[in-house]
Image (cartoon, rainbow, N blue to C red; front, side, top):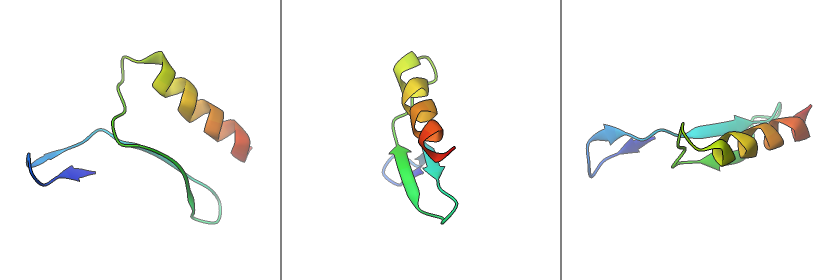
Length: 48
């Protein structure tokens, strides 16, 4: 994602299913937050 106001990229995570549908989006992903990873992995498990 791009922050037009700040002119910088925003760390974001998207999970896209096989049909091309975004099933999870986090536009404020923090690499140091365990909860953010857990949420992504939880969504990925739903797709397996």
